[in-house]
Image (tube, each protein chain N blue to C red):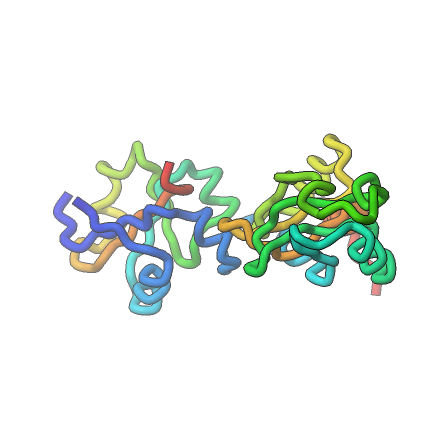
Length: 155
Length: 67
C-alpha cells in the first residue's frame, strides 16, 4: 500500500486497557472495576493457618480473604464457608483455588450484572499477569452501576 | 511486513505523533480506542488506508489482542 514505516502493536487494545491507560470512546467515562475495587481487602499466604487468618480478617471487618504470594499473584479465595473451617488447617488446603477474576478495565455495570447472575458476593480484580488490584463486592458494583443511570441531582 | 512493537514503544511513538489505526469493527472502536486512534476496519484497510493516512508518516496498527 506504499507505507514505509508500519508497526503492529500485537498485544492490542486489551493490553493497553489492562495497564490502566486512558482510552477514548463512549465507554471511556464509564466506571471500571479497577477504580471500584477495594485495595485494602485482606490477604494471606498459602503457608499460613486458618485460625490467625480468620481472626485478622474479622478484626478488619471483612468476611473474605484473598490468597496471594509475595508478588500478590492470586491463588485462591477464602469466603465465609472456608473461613469457618479447622483453625489448624493450612490455607493451601482450606482455600477455594482458582477463583473467577476480572480485569481492571471491565465496566462495573457489566460486572455487576455478571456477579448477580452467578451469585458472586465479591470477586478479585487482577492484572493480566494475575496480580491482585483489589476485591470488588457485589454491593459496591451494584451501587456504582445504579449511580451511572441515576438522574443528575438538581442544583 | 510490519514490525512488532510493545506498549512502551507505542506510548513513546504516540508522543512523537505517530498515526494510530484500530482495525476492529466500528462499534468496538466507538466504545473504546487508544487516544488519537482512527478506525479503519480490516475489510476496508486496503481501500481506505491511502485516503485516511499520510503515507510519509509512521503508522501503528492494532487489534483487540494477539488472537
